[in-house]
Image (cartoon, rainbow, N blue to C red; front, side, top):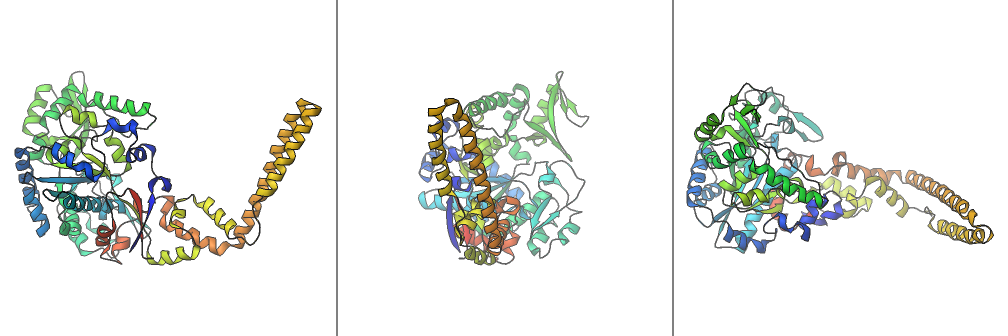
Length: 518
C-alpha cells in the first residue's frame, strides 16, 4: 500500500476555525491548552494529576462492564495498567453506528491507537491506553440507524426511543440478514442484549489485539463522580455563561460556533426516555413527560441515582475528562471546533483541558480505480478540485486544437484601450460607452471559448467519462469517501485492512492520507 499526503487546505473540505487551529494562529491561543504536537505531551503528562481514588473507581467500573466479554491479552493488560499512576489514556468518542457506520469511525480509533504507539516510543516510562468512549446515551437514532455498503443504504427500523445504547436487539435479526456477506463477528455482536453491548463486542473484535478499551459512561459508579457538576448546572447554570462568553469571543474573530449551551445542560435519562430538563415557575420539568421535581427531590435523586442525568454536548467532554486519566481527545473537524468553546468550563471545574488532536483523514483508492486513475493522467491533488472545472481543464490540456482565446482576448483589451484614449481626446463622455462595448465584446469571446471547450470535451468523451467515473466513486455524492462508505467495502476483500491503516497512518501528520496500491 502506498500513501500520498495532501495538505488539508488544498482539499478545500475543511473550515477556517479547524485549519487555523492546526496552523497555530495566534488569535486562537487562549482557546485551548497544549498544542497538538508530540513534544507538548511532556507538559500534558505533568499537568494531568489523576487521583488514585478515581483510578480505582474507573477500574472497578470497567471490570464490571467487561464481565461478559472475552478479553485479548492486550486489553487485559491495559485494564490492569489503568490502575498504575504512570498510565494515561488517549480517547475518542463516537455514536453507536450500525456495522461501524462511515469509514471515519474506523479512522478515529486507528488514530487513537497510533497516537498511543507514538507516545510510548517518545515517553517510554509511561503507559498509554487507547480508549473508545461509546455515545450510549445519545438519543438521535436517525443519525445511526443506517449505513451505506457497496453503494446501497441499509436501515434498521424500530419504534424504540430514549438512549440508543439501551435499545433492545430482539428485532434486529431480520435487518442483519439483509446485509450481504456480513462477517460472523457482526452477527454475534447483534445477538447481544442491547446496542451498547453489540458495539462493544464488534469494536473489541476489531481492535482488541491493539488493546483498545471501550468505556460506557452510562454507569452509576462513574456518574457519581459527576454529581457536583450536575448540581451546579441544574441550580446555578454555570456552564451556559462560560460557554456563551467563549463563543462570543470566537464569533468576534469571525468564526462560526458549533454548539449552543442551555441553562440546563442535562437530559433526564430513564428506561426509554432521554428528554431535556427545564425549570418553569420554580419546578423542574422533564419535557414530553409528566415528570417534574422540586429542588429537594432533585437533590435526593442526584445523590441516589446520578445515572438519571445525562450530559449534553456541553458537559459530556468534562465528564469524560473527570473519570479518565486522559491526555488528548481525538476527533473530527466539528468536534475540535466545539471543544474550543469549552475550555472555560474545564478551568472553572479545575480539570485539565486535553490536547485536541484531529483524527487522520483518508481516502482509499481500490485497485480497479487505481488503474483507471493512472489512465486519466490525473494527479492525487487534482482529485480534490471542483469536478466540472477539473474536467474542463483536462479537455483543454489534452486538446489537439487551440481552445483558449487568451491571446485574442488580450488583443481585444489592447485595442479597446487605444479606442478609449482616442474617445477621451474627442469627448470624455464617450469613455463609458467604449467600456460598455469592451465588456460586451469580452463576454462574447468568453462564450465562444466555452463552446470551444464543450466541443473539445465531446471529442474527448471517453477519457473524461473515465475520469468522472473515478471521481464519483472516490467522492460519493460529491462528499468525502470516509463520510459515506463503510469499512466492509474494503475489509471483505482485504481482511488486513485495519492492519494496513495501523501501518500507514501517522497521527501527528495533519495531512490528508490517500492510500492506494499504485
